[in-house]
Length: 139
Image (cartoon, rainbow, N blue to C red; front, top):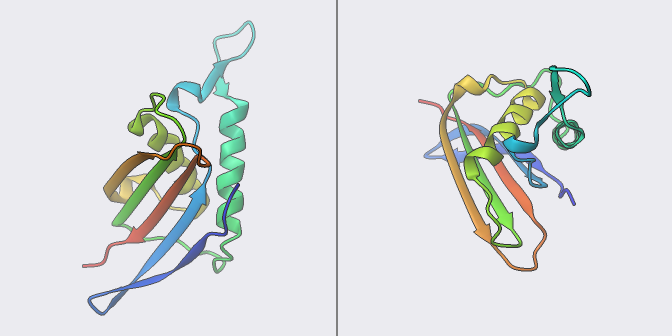
């Protein structure tokens, strides 16, 4: 389930900084992003990866951001994964494709991310999801 996401600003010591917050399903692990074409050497994105791109693009479109909206670097990204079980899940593997999908959907270069905060929490019996906040850092 995707919850309604939001965008807006945060007042931080009197300075308004653009911020985008999304609640998304868990991204596919980096280990499950690519597959080989049958009988070939060429790699392509898996159906799960393409589906996740669509979900992120849809969530960003639902924000109703102004046309041409772009987050400007430097950026701070916070990602929180909520897991229903203690199964192994590497934070860095989860973050890579999520960041790539967000960068494409929001129109920023992920090279502009200067702070990245990753957390994971196990809440037995809950719906697995990912909370993401992207914020412009202003001097």
